[in-house]
Amino acid sequence: MRSIPLLLLAVLVAVLSGCPVNAVRTNGPQARTVQGGTRTQVAYFYNLTDNCQPEGVPQVTVTRAPANGTVTIGAGNDLPQYPSDNPRAVCNQAPVPTSQVYYESNGGFRGADSFAIQVQFSGTFTQTYTYELTVN
Image (cartoon, rainbow, N blue to C red):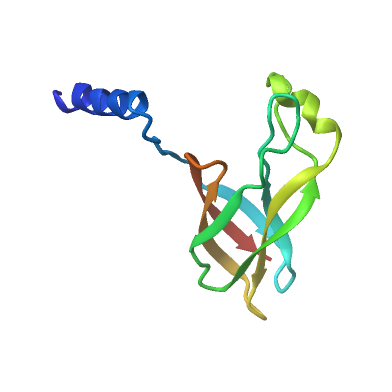
């Protein structure tokens, strides 16, 4: 019980002293269905300011490779997908620079596969994602 106030105090001291505090958020598993043997885009990531300007392209790192295929990361342009109740929903009108994530299964493989990635949106904000794939 006492560790929570101490943790909060440590974060407060770090912020006030100018030390960066890294925020890492882990998202729940993302389910995708892909065609076997075909390179398929399974996700893309962008980082925009309040006025829809790109604030750097997120850096994506594979932290756990799939057992039955390969994951590749590429650069591209995609439409943002902010929910309608998000102030940045107005940004959904034009493509922006993105980091794209592709999966391709090994030849002849059908079934379940998975992989994990880490996405660094800024110097201090990182999210982790796990993708659970059904390969048809």
